[in-house]
Length: 209
Image (cartoon, rainbow, N blue to C red; front, side, top):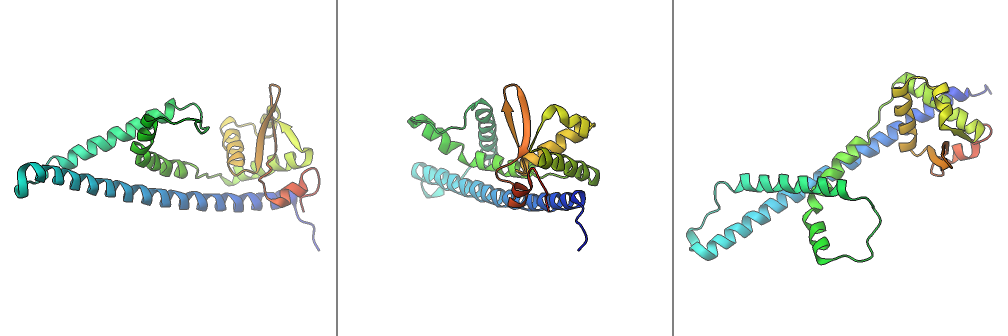
């Protein structure tokens, strides 16, 4: 039985993992985008009905929703999106709150649909693409981490000299949860992620095949 080339194995492995990740990211994007679209449409219909109901109570059966209603709704929707964006920037902690006020509950409810909308684009931004050359470099970096168990970040430029390529590759491997970044003192280290496939876990520090 011919020996398996580790570099070729890791390159193929990363290509498959990247393809799987991108399919998952695209699926999440389509689901959240469709959910946001349905919720915006439902909010528009509910708002239209409430406005019509309120005008009917005042003017009677001849009441009609103003022609400017779609424009007003769009302006309010944009304001909610801007508000959700600034609220996201101002939120410094994702930890759950011990106590939630009525105002915070109302704000969460008001910004629910805009947050789902941003979540859709967040899922799409997780889509990653690496060139064949970048996949080769990523496989070399992964082989180094597997061999040495952990590698300090300051050694990575020796393996991948191009700054832009290096950032894309390291970020992709972290996003795929193949590598994990941890700090010891002031030194960041790369090691195999606990969430990486079992075959890599077994191969760390030794043979990968």
